[in-house]
Image 1: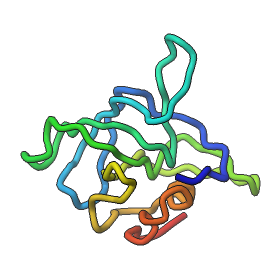
Image 2: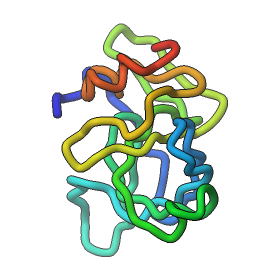
Image 3: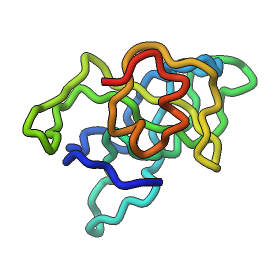
Image 4: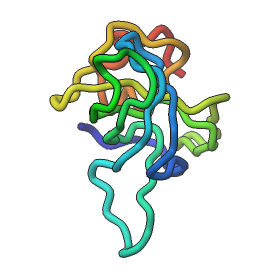
Length: 132
Protein backbone atom coordinates (compact mmCIF):
# COMPACT_ATOMS: atom_id res chain seq x y z
CA UNK A 1 0.00 0.00 0.00
CA UNK A 2 1.52 3.28 -1.13
CA UNK A 3 0.95 6.75 0.38
CA UNK A 4 -1.62 9.10 -1.14
CA UNK A 5 -0.38 12.32 -2.74
CA UNK A 6 -3.48 14.38 -1.83
CA UNK A 7 -4.68 15.65 1.52
CA UNK A 8 -7.90 13.63 1.66
CA UNK A 9 -10.59 14.85 4.06
CA UNK A 10 -11.95 11.92 6.05
CA UNK A 11 -15.71 12.16 5.61
CA UNK A 12 -17.19 8.68 6.14
CA UNK A 13 -17.87 7.62 9.74
CA UNK A 14 -18.16 4.13 11.14
CA UNK A 15 -21.77 3.02 10.67
CA UNK A 16 -22.22 4.81 7.33
CA UNK A 17 -24.08 2.97 4.56
CA UNK A 18 -22.22 3.14 1.24
CA UNK A 19 -23.09 1.60 -2.16
CA UNK A 20 -20.89 -1.09 -3.69
CA UNK A 21 -20.18 -0.29 -7.36
CA UNK A 22 -18.40 -3.42 -8.58
CA UNK A 23 -19.88 -6.60 -10.05
CA UNK A 24 -19.49 -8.89 -7.01
CA UNK A 25 -23.21 -8.97 -6.21
CA UNK A 26 -23.13 -6.75 -3.12
CA UNK A 27 -25.31 -3.62 -3.33
CA UNK A 28 -25.15 -1.82 0.03
CA UNK A 29 -22.31 -1.91 2.57
CA UNK A 30 -22.08 -0.66 6.16
CA UNK A 31 -18.69 0.52 7.46
CA UNK A 32 -17.65 -1.43 10.57
CA UNK A 33 -14.09 -0.18 11.05
CA UNK A 34 -11.24 1.64 9.31
CA UNK A 35 -8.00 -0.26 8.79
CA UNK A 36 -4.93 1.52 10.13
CA UNK A 37 -6.91 4.27 11.88
CA UNK A 38 -5.15 5.76 14.88
CA UNK A 39 -7.17 8.32 16.76
CA UNK A 40 -7.94 9.84 20.12
CA UNK A 41 -9.79 7.79 22.73
CA UNK A 42 -13.53 8.15 22.29
CA UNK A 43 -13.29 9.56 18.76
CA UNK A 44 -15.23 7.75 16.08
CA UNK A 45 -13.01 6.46 13.25
CA UNK A 46 -13.40 8.13 9.86
CA UNK A 47 -12.35 7.13 6.35
CA UNK A 48 -11.78 8.87 3.02
CA UNK A 49 -10.84 8.09 -0.58
CA UNK A 50 -8.15 5.41 -0.81
CA UNK A 51 -8.74 3.98 2.68
CA UNK A 52 -9.31 0.30 3.37
CA UNK A 53 -12.35 -0.40 5.52
CA UNK A 54 -14.08 -3.43 7.02
CA UNK A 55 -17.69 -3.64 5.86
CA UNK A 56 -20.80 -5.73 6.40
CA UNK A 57 -22.95 -6.46 3.34
CA UNK A 58 -26.51 -5.26 4.05
CA UNK A 59 -28.13 -5.72 0.62
CA UNK A 60 -27.20 -7.84 -2.36
CA UNK A 61 -26.59 -11.48 -3.22
CA UNK A 62 -27.87 -13.95 -0.60
CA UNK A 63 -24.44 -15.63 -0.37
CA UNK A 64 -22.75 -12.31 0.51
CA UNK A 65 -25.32 -10.84 2.92
CA UNK A 66 -24.48 -10.68 6.65
CA UNK A 67 -20.78 -11.33 5.95
CA UNK A 68 -17.77 -9.13 6.70
CA UNK A 69 -15.36 -8.12 3.91
CA UNK A 70 -12.56 -5.65 3.26
CA UNK A 71 -13.47 -2.76 0.95
CA UNK A 72 -11.81 0.27 -0.64
CA UNK A 73 -13.40 3.72 -0.86
CA UNK A 74 -13.12 4.99 -4.44
CA UNK A 75 -15.40 8.09 -4.31
CA UNK A 76 -16.66 10.54 -1.69
CA UNK A 77 -19.01 13.52 -1.75
CA UNK A 78 -16.91 15.67 0.57
CA UNK A 79 -14.33 17.64 -1.39
CA UNK A 80 -10.62 17.17 -0.77
CA UNK A 81 -7.51 19.01 -1.95
CA UNK A 82 -4.82 17.74 -4.31
CA UNK A 83 -1.20 18.92 -4.25
CA UNK A 84 -1.75 20.98 -7.42
CA UNK A 85 -4.26 23.07 -5.45
CA UNK A 86 -7.44 21.87 -7.14
CA UNK A 87 -10.32 20.45 -5.13
CA UNK A 88 -12.08 17.25 -6.13
CA UNK A 89 -15.53 15.99 -5.14
CA UNK A 90 -17.87 13.36 -6.56
CA UNK A 91 -21.66 13.23 -6.68
CA UNK A 92 -21.83 10.10 -4.47
CA UNK A 93 -19.91 7.91 -2.05
CA UNK A 94 -18.82 4.50 -3.37
CA UNK A 95 -16.69 1.49 -2.45
CA UNK A 96 -15.56 -1.80 -3.97
CA UNK A 97 -14.92 -5.14 -2.27
CA UNK A 98 -11.27 -6.21 -1.95
CA UNK A 99 -9.44 -9.37 -0.92
CA UNK A 100 -7.24 -9.35 2.17
CA UNK A 101 -4.19 -9.24 -0.15
CA UNK A 102 -5.36 -5.94 -1.70
CA UNK A 103 -6.77 -7.24 -4.99
CA UNK A 104 -10.30 -6.30 -6.14
CA UNK A 105 -12.90 -9.10 -5.94
CA UNK A 106 -14.89 -7.84 -8.94
CA UNK A 107 -13.84 -7.51 -12.56
CA UNK A 108 -15.42 -4.14 -13.41
CA UNK A 109 -16.26 -0.85 -11.66
CA UNK A 110 -19.25 1.36 -12.50
CA UNK A 111 -18.49 5.07 -12.69
CA UNK A 112 -15.31 7.07 -12.12
CA UNK A 113 -12.55 6.16 -9.66
CA UNK A 114 -10.46 8.71 -7.74
CA UNK A 115 -6.80 8.89 -8.74
CA UNK A 116 -5.79 8.59 -5.06
CA UNK A 117 -7.32 5.10 -4.83
CA UNK A 118 -5.50 4.01 -8.02
CA UNK A 119 -2.17 5.42 -6.74
CA UNK A 120 -2.48 3.30 -3.62
CA UNK A 121 -3.82 0.14 -5.32
CA UNK A 122 -2.72 -0.08 -8.96
CA UNK A 123 -4.80 -3.22 -9.58
CA UNK A 124 -7.95 -1.10 -9.16
CA UNK A 125 -6.90 1.09 -12.09
CA UNK A 126 -6.84 -1.94 -14.41
CA UNK A 127 -10.55 -2.64 -13.95
CA UNK A 128 -11.71 0.99 -13.68
CA UNK A 129 -13.71 2.45 -16.57
CA UNK A 130 -12.31 5.95 -15.91
CA UNK A 131 -9.88 7.50 -13.43
CA UNK A 132 -10.31 11.12 -12.34
